[in-house]
Image (cartoon, rainbow, N blue to C red; front, side, top):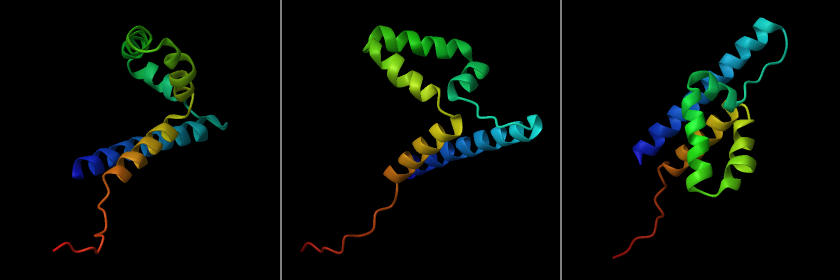
Length: 103
């Protein structure tokens, strides 16, 4: 379970970094800036984004790309990373003992 907590913290850290980058861009341009996840992904590695689209459309249901993945890619990166990180961290949390003793 520590692996899930560590992975969750990595995603939360990526969300925080993305939020800081958007904040710095907002201050520098004097206008509100929110970078969509798809734009950030395209800036980092456009070939993998195109490959992901081709794989999803070819090997899964094609309608998953347009309404589902495109909607996620239009969200700000810090929102997506933070939500995924929180969910993964929650799945890896330490559970409190139930207090039920079995003899």
